[in-house]
Image (cartoon, rainbow, N blue to C red):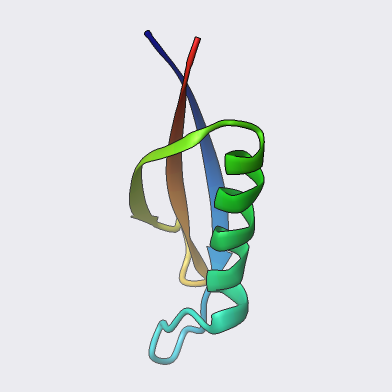
Length: 66
């Protein structure tokens, strides 16, 4: 049976163009790699626009065998 763990990663982005840069992408990689070292596997991701014009949130769900 899988045990699930979900986390929210907030990503700020520019108002003009609303682009995410390499530094922000590396935050996602760092979190995924850190969880992988702990035995978690990436299950799914979902992106949500922010409450304001300055960012978005990424819901990341990991799973591992219990």
